[in-house]
Length: 520
Image (tube, rainbow, N blue to C red):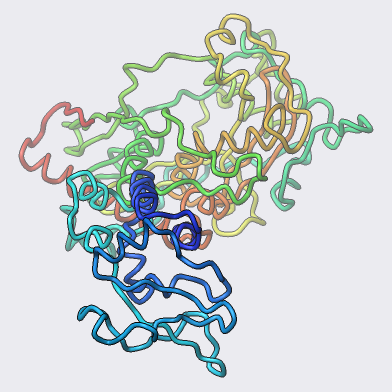
């Protein structure tokens, strides 16, 4: 940004038709576009306009309008000797030089030590130095600088130590026998091969995976009553006792916490833009968080009298049940079950399931962070992956389904397909770019809380699956934070938990044992 602005000023000064009025108008234009003040650039370049004129430029500033303005401001004219490429400043008598001119020569910024050329320094008029500023210019200079690091002294959590907010795993003996399932159909090779893996090669029509994986069971044919019931934090029978045994005051599930932590991300990062380096030039400079990803959310802080602890639930009063919520649960089961086992969950075959299979509790990971007990669902596992070996399963519907969900709830199918790897339409890249805008922030927090290695994506259009892609946590951090070594992301997560922990502590201290309190 600074180099572009310097080049802009250099071009204006070197032009033969550049009068002072044009220069002032250009400076105001740069200010209105959000650039820094010109005086700041001149100070960084030795407070000299001559220091930003390139040595190879031979243009003479002979415009009469500019000369008159310079003379009125008691600033000597600068002329060049075209033959020797030197400044002809010695022709002026000392008596004619203004007293405020510094006659001590300065080196050209790009001059070599062996061939040193000098130029006398001089100052701009006060109107161009920014001494007389209008209120609009002052407000622009005081605006947010997104490139500057955050000033933590402005925040109320100054002095909070982050050492107590490291994620620590908690063992729950009653659930030690529950192990996350493994991938079926040979999909596990996607975990160790970056990029998109197509179900079927569009050119040769050869299947890379069993053909049975491609077809998706319709929602109206799947028996969802055969699946274990999902419990929110306040209705979970295990969480209150685990929190009490470990001396933790609050317990929450991952899905209830990520929406709140997303708002802390925007605060701490000062609305840092997304990183699109993983994409082609089709999406350069176009990635911004969607409104759904950046909108405010609300949570409930509920006091549980039996355990004396507080449960945190997300507010779903404005949500509506959509077909994708049910389809996601059935597709996740499809990826970890054999075709024969998966067919048992069809309504006409659900009587073949044993009662134990229907009531089996899903695998969860428990961890503590500050005064919080965090519960994270473990979808799948492969011991060859780093860390705990667990990862999350995410079924990703195509854009035609997500952005016309009302129509999909009624019809249940679309002809939109993913045909190419790259491009802005009907491509895996377009879906990946939209994933960065809408869900990567939430997915990365879920993976970090659950100490998972990444997420496995299954791209589909509700009728068939097009391909798979494994995205490790480092890749999501690169898209969100601009770095992939987890340092910034981890510090931001711990700081966000510290802020929230400090807030709910003050809230419960002021309003103890409140049955329900809503925080927006």
